[in-house]
Structure formats: structure tokens, C-alpha cells
Length: 365
Image (tube, rainbow, N blue to C red; front, top):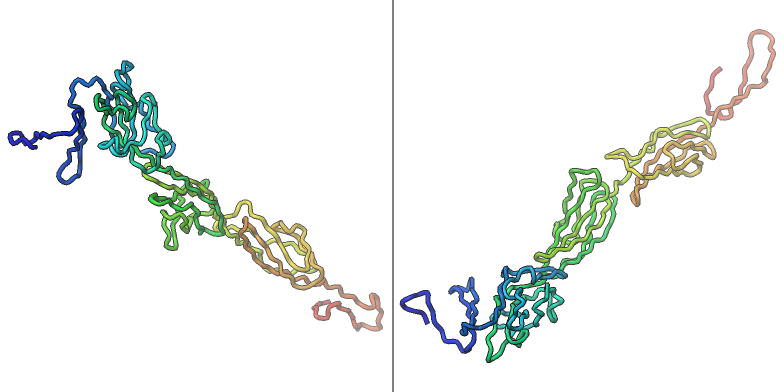
């Protein structure tokens, strides 16, 4: 009942002769305060107090250090009762929501310390001192001391994965593990060596928070992408290298015509735009010809016979390749013969005769 003379004073009748527990809240239930106490003012037990009552959210594998944050009777070796801890799911009903009890000298609590503990479950830790450990402190004839509760929860630590890949060009699809329910994820990138202004853009209606977006890279090279998965305060990440290979564009050079069946290619060049490709390989191919060094940019070429031949220069950058063609026309070297080699005529007029191996060749005396 409310005291009419003092509006902030209330009185009540409680069913227990030893203790009471109340929850005081505002009319809207937005906030509340738990109050617990004993009618016996001379109870010899003292469970002590926690230095910090803020909720503690931990990740899988992390521990709650009890010894670092508890003060009071726990550190007093002159116990008059049995000191222990109780884990429950409702501090207003410790007996009804009891999960387990723990030794009073335990230095820390992990999720594995709690019987059948589960990530995502809200637990409360209370210190108890009485005639027995844990719930045995609840005796109809003896008082006990129970501390305020500290909220504890463990969250699953994400363990994402990411798969490497390479592509010809600047577009690739990232491969991260799916996002578990209730979690979120996002990608970050580490620039290739020597690049200070690296960036990437998600394309084709994908976003940075998807596990498999398609991205457009600003540069060629090896980029380390990291897939972050977040579960409240708990995070996990996995990195993979994505290789954006430049597609080669070599120049085989201009078409040439040579006398004979041997020529040197001098006008070819590997890729130079937008930049040269370190580590690329070259190869010349062509039917009916023999190369002095098919992997050289400037080989000598020998044809089986005169005629026109198509040569192809291919440049490879990993699995990416580009090629260009040029033609070489080999023509026979003229070898005219005169008959007879020595002649004598009467007078000042003579007829000269020559035999051309190719009647289409032109010549002059």
C-alpha cells in the first residue's frame, strides 16, 4: 500500500518470513530496478557485490573473469557459510530458472562452464552464501545472502571462408561463405603492391554486403579481398587473393616483302598499353616456316619456298592471351643468264640475249 502522507513510501505483505524480492518499474515498463533483501537483520552471510553489473556479451571461446570484477566477502577467507555462484535465466526466480552452480573460487566462466550452455541464451550470474552450495543455500530455517545478478551472454564467433579466383580483365565475382541468420557481412580490399589509389565498385545489382558480389577493379594485379562476418560484438574474417590479369595486346608489326626465303622480323612489340605485362610469354607460329627462336620478339624466319606466309604473335599472361598477325612475302632472287657469254659480230650492231628464270621479272641492261 502507498503511504498517503509520504507518496514515495510503500508497504507490502510478503509470504516469506526470511526474504523479499521486488521489481520496481515505471508505469510504461521502460525501466526497472530489482530489490532483494532479508527480514532478519542479523543474517551472518555476505555474498558480496560485483563491481560491474553491465551486461557482458562475449564471443565463443571468451571467458568472463569473475575474480577481476567481484569484491566483498568473496575475497574474505573467514567465510561463515558456503560461498558459490549460481547461473540462472531469470534473477527474479533463481530457483525456478536455475541452470547450474559453480565453485566460489572459480577464476573465470566460459560457456562450457555452464551445463548445456548455448550461444545466444541470456544467463545471469549471482553470488550466494548460505548453509550450502548453490540451491542448497535455500533453507526454510536459515537465511542466505544473494548478490545482484550480472547478465551474461555468449555469441557465436563467425568462421567465414573466402575462395581465391582470377580473371582476364577487371571484373570478377567474389566468393564468400553465406551469411548465417542474424549476422551481417561486408567486403574490404587491400591494394596491389605499389598502388596508392586503388578502388573497386560492385556491379550488376550486387552490393558490398553480399557474400558473392561482382566487382570492377580500378587496377590490374593481385588484390586481397577480405570477407568480414559480424555477429553483434563477435566478428570473423577470411581473406583470398583475386588476380585481375591484363589481357595482352601484342603488335606483330607491319607486313614485309623480302628477297629469298629468309627474313628477320624487326617491327614486333609486346603489350605496352595501358602498361607492359611482367612475366608474360611470347610465341610465334606459322605454317610452312621455321623460326630461329619462336619465343623471341625478333626471330629469323625461313620459308620452305617463295610465297606469302601468315605469322601470328601470341602473348600470354597466365590464362589470358592476345594475338596479332602479319604477313611475309618471300620472292625469288632473279638470276638472269646470257647466251652466249662471249660473242663476236661483224660491224657495230649486235643482238643481246638474256634468259630470265621468272618471265614476269623486269630488268635492264
